[in-house]
Image (tube, rainbow, N blue to C red; front, side, top):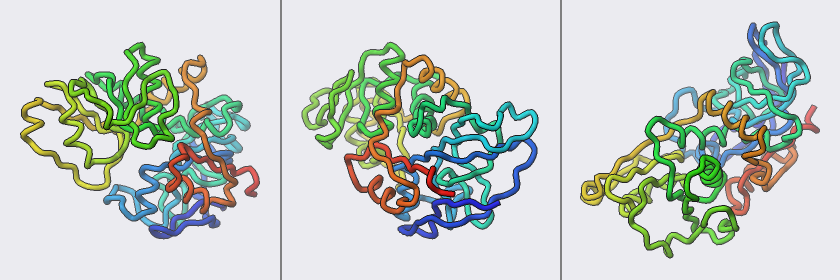
Length: 312
């Protein structure tokens, strides 16, 4: 089989290419992708050439870990039927291309165990399950303290704030330096320069800006915790004296697991969590190059999705 996919041939270069697919095996499903989303974290780092060495990565690369579409082929015992709408967190199913992510494609082959059945009415927002599950994973880790400060009001920051409110905790404060992203929410979104607090118990960084670490440590209450929820391309460092005086704790939140995906799907199905308003930009997959440029450079773009329906 062959498919049309976004291919990053090297940093700064991408376009639609024809890529060979590995044959499906027992336990696999074949999915025609309807919508895929662009990550402004890890995918941007690959595109800019700033991604540190990461297991399973290299060029040429099919990017994208956020994809939703329709099952077109399945095997007995997978639990899926042809016609089911599913979320798939990418796939490593390509001949001659790395598929560490692998979701920005018209068709993919995936182990059925990695897919999640979703409502077809979700449309483009169905591709956002992984990011929502990543936010949930940061909040639900054993011993985690729910945030009273979130840094960054992009897509991940918004999801962290929404899930905190859904959990019944007091509404967190959110820092955002971009005035256009300080839109009204069920929680305060403020300019950090106007925040005088230095007693936050739990700060979640969703900005991916490692240089902020000293600033955040200074804003902690004694014994407070900073959760690094973004992805950081450069080594992190901080001045020890302030961290010593604060008895600060640092925690790293990794990617989601299956329990997080299932929990997010349940919140969506009950209407407690919405994702559709996070998709601010859409483009045809044929315009992928321009779409990636917009996603990476336009601060008004929270989440860009590609529509693959016109790709054969």
